[in-house]
Image (cartoon, rainbow, N blue to C red):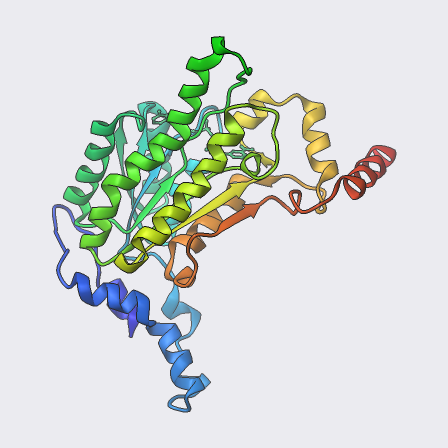
Length: 326
Ligand SMILES: NC(=O)c1ccc[n+]([C@@H]2O[C@H](COP(=O)([O-])OP(=O)(O)OC[C@H]3O[C@@H](n4cnc5c(N)ncnc54)[C@H](O)[C@@H]3O)[C@@H](O)[C@H]2O)c1
């Protein structure tokens, strides 16, 4: 049964478990465990009563090892990187917490360990190739494998369309996109050696609809394009690559940069009338990272309460109604 098999893929200090890569890649493609039981049932070889119960399936990521970049949070509370790292650890993964800010990321590690999870910190800059190589090498040396990479690091800064801002533009592109490419470049061989893996890029709805920033929107659109290319180039290695596009998410960073009336407007124009939080993003990432999403690759998943789907006229009326009842 797959889950027994998957759960045998234990991470351990210094333990290398890259054998049987071909078998694992075949398993990922062929279907197994819960899915295999379902197939058997459809073919009349089993019954619904013999299918594993949810307790056989969760925690979904037991025995997996994950890297989360930008796993600290700027400010008090829980940003997306911290929430993703905490949820993956809660689902059983051993998590490498990457950030350039040692204090922030240590706080994430503290929270995970306090909750009974496994995590360690790696401090460095994801725009530097040697640092990205170090993050992957350290992770494999400490846990024996790499199954999941979440490229969460991201910066947003206003950049105008003139030559004076060339430096700022390049910085946003480097931090948001080049970093994801560099991390994937080093992660893919490690995942391949272990039989496959899952890459999740954290983009933004600013990569789907115009955002009003000449650098942030293009950088986030490129992250989705990068995931699609990896999905196509490395599908046969058992590697999936997908993108999550957060919408209006209330994180400590967003709270810091957004004026209060902008928060009210963000709530008012969405079909659900609420903001998301970092856990909404983390849940989507945990799903895409897990074998529950074994047949999903190359997709761009907005986690935005429907705001990118709504047209300007209903958005206008929703906002008017919200203002009238405020
Ligand atoms: N908050 C939102 O509303 C929202 C919406 C859409 C997309 N996003 C995306 O979600 C992601 C996280 O957002 P957040 O608000 O939690 O951010 P955050 O600023 O709280 O966390 C990002 C972390 O990345 C780290 N970091 C930045 N540059 C780095 C570098 N070069 N090397 C290593 N680490 C670096 C920072 O130290 C920080 O801890 C970003 O990619 C952002 O674009 C957020």
